[in-house]
Image (cartoon, rainbow, N blue to C red; front, side, top):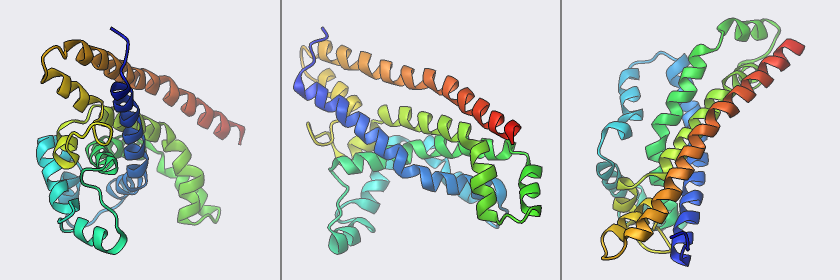
Length: 235
């Protein structure tokens, strides 16, 4: 039952790598987007807000197709990247990371944005009155206070990436050893006679990874919060 084949191990490791790069790659943009949506007022903010959360509403297959139109070898952006820099995302594991990043991006933005909304603005104002510029206030005051939200968002995005299926299979296909992540491997097993055992093995791994990420998010966030509060009290 638990005798995993090399192809299954490859799918598991690829999923972990794709989820990690997808989460890490989207973090800087998610942090900037959350800050803009939390702190800025501008025409069209509602539209931007809607676009950010669109991947949560659209069918994942639609998101994958849009990625194919934009970043495919003949896509609007993909053709330019291929011609100028030789960068290709479609049907590569890097494309799976991009699909995971897009699908997890709204969760990451939401967690960071909620943390930013909860920050006491008087602390930032006090730092400014002491002569700190905006960037230094963000790094020394705002960022430490929102670290629990960032961590929670990263874990949610990572867990979402581990389970991503529709956008991935549409954008990068289901190529064993190259783009076949854990959910795609499970799907493959369900399509062949006698594949139930393999599907169950990988399903148990998928449940364990997702549950582990969710269980770890609470204690880690509380630990960071206590350390931040302890540092502030010491100062």
